[in-house]
Length: 245
Ligand SMILES: [Fe+2]
Image 1: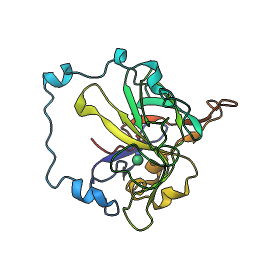
Image 2: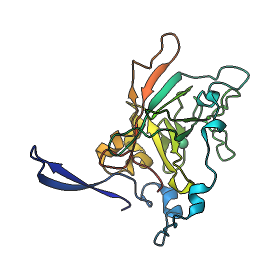
Image 3: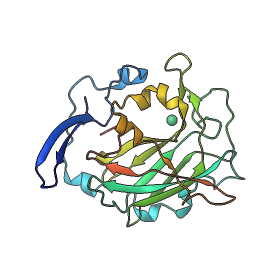
Image 4: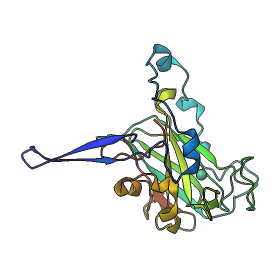
C-alpha cells in the first residue's frame, strides 16, 4: 500500500469522534494493471536528499510558457477533428488554498483515440492538426485552463478486449524536479471506467470519483465548446489520486 491518509472526524466542539483509514493513491503494483507488475519497485524506495541543487536547479519559469500553449487546437495547418472542449480548474493544497505559478502539463490521444507515438500503431487515424500536448501556468487563484479536443477511447491489450476510457494525462510540476506529480482526468458517464484496471487501481471509490471531471455550463461556450472542470488537490483526505510520488 503506497499512501494511507488518516481522517479524523471532529464534532462541533472540536473533539475527535472517529478515525478511519482509506487509500487514495494507487498501489505501485496493481494485479490487474499488467505493466505495473514489471515496473513497480521491488525494493524499498530511496529517499532523495533535499540538497541545495534541487532548489536552485532549473525549473520551467513563467516566461518560457507562451499563452498559446494552453490551446491544443492551435499551431497546425487547420482545426483538429473532434469535439472541442474547455478544460479548467484550480490547483489547491490540502487545506483548499490556491497554488499559484505552477506548471501544469497535459497530454492525450486525439479524437480517434490515437497518440502520436511509435508504440501506438492501432488502426485509428492520426490527425495532422492535433499533436496532443499542452501546458500552462496556474494563476494567483490556482486556476488553469486548456482548450483541446475530447480524446477518444483506445485499446491497450492489457487483457482481452481492453479499452481505456477517454482521459487526459495531467502533470503538476512543483518547484523542483522531485516534486512532479502525475494523474489522469476522466469524463463523466464513461462506461469504460468500470472495467479499467488503471482507474480501478485506486481502491477507494470516493478517491476514484475525484478523477472524474464535471460537465460545466459556466465554461461551455455557445457555438464553440463544451466545458469540463477538474480541480486538483494535493494531499489531504480530499486529495487527487496521483500515480507517482
Ligand atoms: Fe493515455
